[in-house]
Length: 250
Image (cartoon, rainbow, N blue to C red):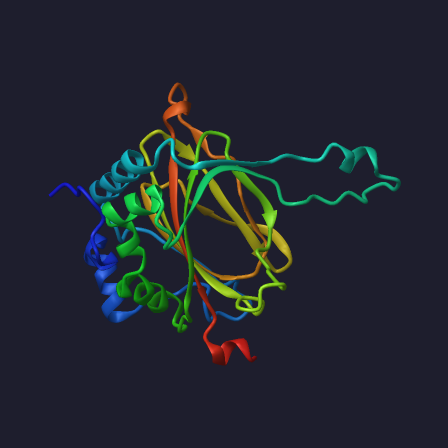
């Protein structure tokens, strides 16, 4: 049955494989593994037809309503250099995004009307991430919608926020990712053993990524298929959680 809005519970998006993770847990490759970067990308838990419905809902409600965000390279980072190999790259990015909150804005109302707010706040979304990480989550922090178009990317960064008391000791991100059929490729690159040389392909119809931040990572420019670049969109639904109090004190 075609989805017209997001279900109130995230669990209702999942197929048999996804519901099995909720009930029986997940054989994680990185969380809890000695020396492993605490990130996991889970695929094959949302059917492609359901993912296509999610893309359609997001496009109908939010296409053209997200804020363009672009942080360009600073040309003075080159001209001001006095020593060879002394360059430093600040975080740069190009994407569309929107923060979702409780304020009575038109966009927040649309997010509520299409079921997105309820699904992102559902118990089963948090339970799924905890099943993958085998770690308890704390309080929810925020919701965000991101849309990557052809050429959009985020440069290397670590998402450490030492000035924010609630998350200075680290936090969790859940990324629900949906790509339309015009997306060719995009890669998530992350640190391992001191090198930015581990990757995940994140251009699939659907995937769920769970991070325990901070650590170094970036996303390569999203590329659309030839002749369809202007129609290529990869959507990311993000919800952040604090560390539980016990882990914060460590």
